[in-house]
Image 1: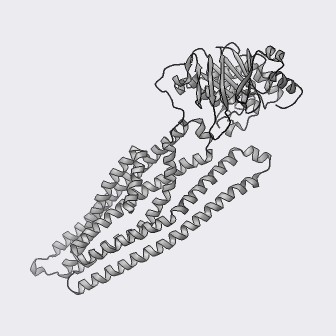
Image 2 (image 1 turned 30 degrees about the vertical axis):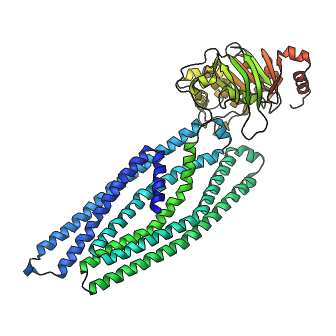
Image 3 (image 1 turned 90 degrees about the vertical axis):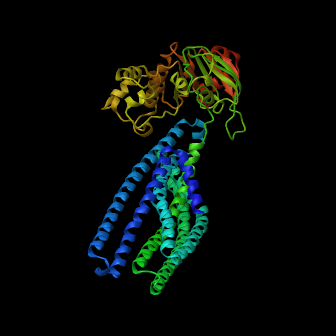
Length: 587
């Protein structure tokens, strides 16, 4: 039944937010009272007509009584207007608050889901889920509270009133209303598959657009604008076709449902006229019956459109719910007060395999990094170097083994305290479309301008920053598009230094830079030697000159470790890779 389906949707929505629960409670009360108040104007109008028809001052029906009825009619209209104003005010405010609350919760959820979730989901797809889910939520709340509830209350009240004033007319309404609802349910099921299809293609289309725009520089560099348009057009065409199919089915259904309503209206009118001619219904009662039934049937006809809107919102809301119900595979320890104080690191028999991968990323990896030492990890691409960083930051948890910092498992730290003690400078620097100052200060709550400048100088970034017209107030553009690769790297180093962490990880930070930029990065790195624990992940062996220890990974395993001199002397894989790189080969 329609009522059961809507009830289930209401229960689903209530679970998303307490504000929605409050909204529904108020909506039910206000809608019921409003529909009761709406009965009075037509009923008073009925009394006016009946008194006019039998008007006879000689038997006590006076102009004064008619004036009272007219004033009562006006008063009931005024009260109805006030109720409508109150209802709209309550609903609009509560719907906006509900949308904001649910979207805020979804954003909070996305921010706190583990990295694995985000790596396996398209960014544009996720954004579209939240934004479109919020818009559909508003549409659903509006249709349920402002249309569905009032129509249902009106239908029930109309049935009781019609049975009271004229049971034959009430009986006809009681027959046709369920027939209409049955047709509505049947037609809704016909569109369900198509409805899910066009929502899917819309989400995919949004994801493709976001991906194209996010990588606009690459698109422009390769002149692939038409290729991106062609890819997105495919999904848009699929969306349009599914939408057109849904509309064809929906319009045919609406035609049938409206035809049933029109037949019901005809029978109600014919039956009422017959009863009046048969002296079993007064003129006022006829007007009252027709007014009530006409409004009820017209609203039942509107119910089909409202119900389709509610159904259209369902897939988006379900996707929205799936985000909210997704559990992170890496759980925080928010009650922990432990902080990283020294920066020593131990990996103890760590084994890890990514989902949908047959090959282990790390296999029984063990090593120790003393506090304030410099340790470099080298190896071919895919050997597991970056996975080590993800384990350290708890983006993932090992399948076996554990990671320790300062003698404590990383699981014993809260996410906040763990990340406060570690900074990462990666190859692909992510900057926000804000000022250079804001980007450097991003990881620190209370950083003044002097602190930012000091960190920038340590990162050898101050000089090029001051060459910009607005200096530290220069906007860097989307993903730092207005800066060169080397400039972005130095901004990232300044951001890492400003946090004053105990551990700094350089994850292939110089692998794609020119010689001059690499020189500045090296100077920044070497300036930190002895002050913090430095973990350097590198392709270029020039980056690891100051390393106290070098660990070579291959297929997720440690195959060699020691100082550079020891590894070169042993003439193993490290020596071979180093020799190849010197010859100019790309590893």
